[in-house]
Amino acid sequence: MKRTTLLHAELSGLIAAFGHGDMLVIGDAGLPVPAGVRVIDLALTRGIPGVFDVLDVVLAELVVERSAMATEAAPDLQAEFARRDIGAVTMLSHDDFKAASRHARAIVRTGECTPYANVALYAGVAF
Image 1 (cartoon, one colour):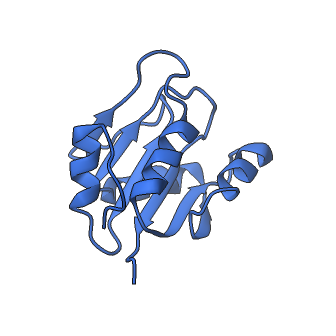
Image 2 (cartoon, rainbow, N blue to C red; image 1 turned 120 degrees about the horizontal axis):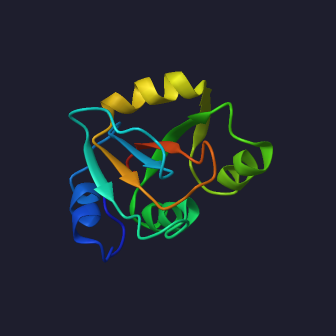
């Protein structure tokens, strides 16, 4: 499912192993990681890297069929997500988003500190 070359080895390997329908969550620094879900922690410091920095790199690598985000996200944050090719978006309450994240193959933790700056990406296929 990979498209190009990603420098972060753990994230690159994960995306290379994705199949249709697999879920990857990219989250802010405060998103809880459910027990048993793999976490790839990219946070260096407050705000670095930002959720959109990570999302843009992942979108260059991963074919995305659909996505989900929290209804509590501010309208400008939702608009920023919508500017990207994340497929059809399902809006969930933050509690439902956290519950759904239990099914993710991994959660990528960023240094983002904007509330509800989280997105779940469901892998598609290139054909």
